[in-house]
Length: 178
Image (cartoon, rainbow, N blue to C red; front, side, top):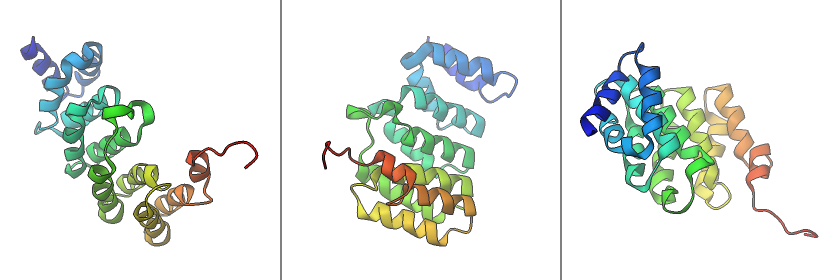
């Protein structure tokens, strides 16, 4: 059956086959993870992109480090998809939650240095997960707010800094009367 899964992943390389192939992978669920993991190393960026998107729904402890490797991908769409999966709250409980030490340094580097503004904007969402507990995360987002060349990145950074709407919404909940 794994050969059939690999064929489905190969179909992701063809724009006219990709939607049907992606739906087939989603229908397979975690059964498709071995083929999807292999697809993350595929030469064709569209395959890697769809495999990252699949992990947004089926991220597991076994695939987390494969996903982190996608942060270095040469295609900005793949990097953005990997960042979205890391930022998405859907699968962030227990052993599936990325460790701060594994994620934060890599993503702060993207926030500071990635040539693509969309990647830097997505990186803010991941770094923003740590602003309530890590001063380095606050400093990285503050630097983006002050220094990024892109106005959208600067604006989004402000949302995650103290006083910003996302910072307020994601902060620790206070007991009534405090």
